[in-house]
Image (tube, rainbow, N blue to C red; front, side):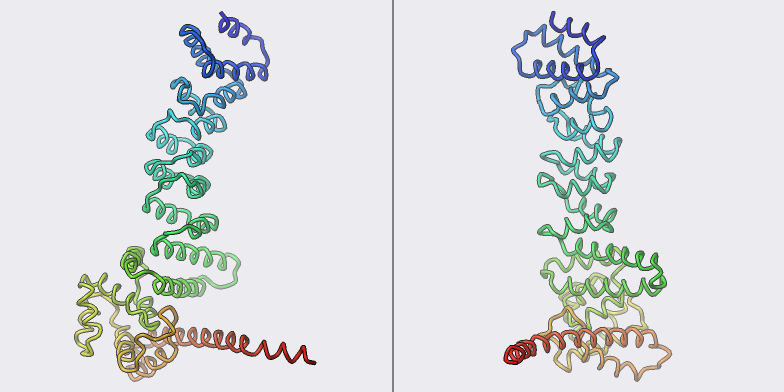
Length: 391
């Protein structure tokens, strides 16, 4: 009887009052001790209210029913497909929605619905994968910031691939713990691309020079990253570099001239298909013909071979192995010796190689000068301050 009177009243009541009455009806359905007949009548009334022209009414219904496991499933499913601000209430909170329902909503609804799903108290891997694959940048950011997210590494990599150029995405990923080195390097590469596009758009550098500058900066960061990476993670990093087209002769030469033999040997093993243990033996073999066979098996350019050969010889002869300066920075003295040795070759054949080595030498000299000045300032400033006080 009460429900019948309610339905009769709805025909003439204004939208605001209908919304309040709808909220009261939904709460009565969930929390009052109604008879079976009244429950059925209330469910029928709420189903009818799904067609109410006012979003205030449907929103009031969603607000009360969204979080309840006792809400009528048919009403919940209808509200989940309503206009974005109403659907978001249900998509974010309803325990009645299956993972398949959420995946379908991610694929068929807009960013508002995707963000609502990404904010759920628990986001299973399948739903996270759907958001990573087709979700908006905002939804992916919400997903990454949600502590209740269960997300597979391949989904994180997909987000990096799609939105790694966006600073908020990079920041939340890099702030987390346990991010693999390969994913960190992918973020570095995305940042490099973004910087290149920025300086070209501002007409600060021409495109070719900008691309070269950021490529070398990315390679420098990659070698530094590899130097700080646990040994068991180096191989996945190398695999990522090869699959993304970044495992070039220039990067390998930089790693070698930085004294990073682990990265160099893992790269040769990956490119050649030869076991790492055998690569290590061949690299340390002073007979040039054995290393050349590995080099050619790795399909590295013949024009760069003299630099690799001379770099290995310099390391073996002059004791650069185990250099206390670490394996993240180019070794100036080593580069200069390799340059001197390569200068004896036909200049026409090695001209591009000489140019690359000279850029390496310049970079190493500037880095050394920067560190020297920092150390000098650290040593002089205290005495300078004392003299100033005495004066």
